[in-house]
Image 1: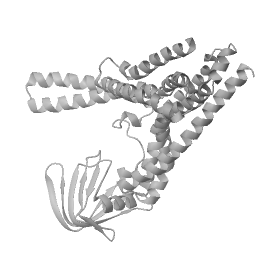
Image 2: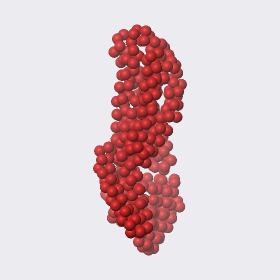
Image 3: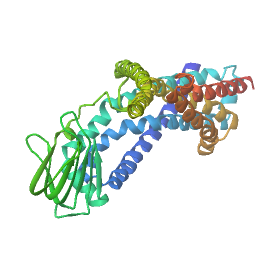
Image 4: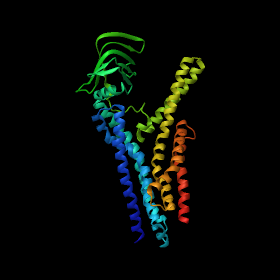
Length: 388
């Protein structure tokens, strides 16, 4: 059997276990975790089922590294336990000849994992929002019926109870938009429905009180309607969205925008300090800190995705030498012996690195410290295995 044939065999065994493990775990997480989470939040069944396909990329980016680790532990652990690695060494073949094709697979899977973050931002989350928006009245009724509270896109609704699709004693709190000031409404009862032509959600309230910005308030006895057209828009407001919901192509423009806002806020802060206007000073400080925080998160987001994606390669670098060294056919035992130091070292370093990057400590470099730590350990273990 030639070295190329052995390489194909090892690669196929690893890939086969990886795909099987990934399929089972993603299916369990999507059907089990997704459905349970949707039911816990009070979403109706049709909305939960409509959202399930869009959960897949979200699950893949978390599951791929662990499944890759399990696959290499299974393939190399079994080969080592049956002395196939020893036989290959006896034939004068360097064990690294079997390792590098699997590492190449892990390398490309790292790029695929990074791409999943892009898919989540550009496809999964907008479509989840669309599914909810298309059945918004059913969603709101369902969540109010189970949790007595609903919040979405600047809207918060709480009720005493839901009776025959009537909201009893609703309290509606709406954040300000470009076309409307902030509103707060209390009523004895209300109904809601989606306009079939425009898709706009409409609240019809009776016997209540409404307050708006500027201390304006009045009571009403007859029916009062509120149209919530902004809830049904699936267009992403890039200027206020979380960096996790933006694609990499959106980041440079958003970073430039935030940098400009920070510069303007710093100049305004100097003026406020000089004028001794303490009320305005507090407002400017809050505005400046909020945009500085968002700027740092934007700058750290793409490196964070690359670091998380290349966790696949790092996991393989740890799993392969440990599996060969243990010589155990018990792949579950090998997997957990590999995963335990990863759990104790890699994930804490990942959290600390991301936190440092979002605080501006040492730029964006800290997001990679977890990967570097695993790579160094993996390279040392590979060297020891190859030497022995």
